[in-house]
Image (cartoon, rainbow, N blue to C red; front, side):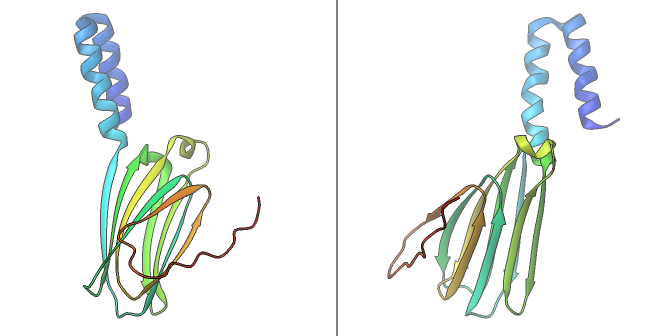
Length: 146
């Protein structure tokens, strides 16, 4: 029996036989089913470029000295997201694509740790970028109006 069908059945039994206590127990289980954490590690040779593309995402970036890119993703309503990470000689690619209809409820929060000598490219529609411990020049090109 699938997780969602099981929750629906349990909620029905809770309403009929268990009262408010059972209903609250079932409703607390629903968020855990729809959340997902994922970590990916890519070994790289700097200089490298990391490309991030996503919709309704928040991306936090930290830098370190190790020659690897670490991507940690926390997804809410994960059933509405497709997450992919790949690597080639040009860089590391991270894509969070929202599924039609079901994806309207979804959101992803990324924590990305990259080597110091890494270029970053973001394509977020919409999204937030947080740069932690910036030491040096950070240049952002103008963004075209929607």
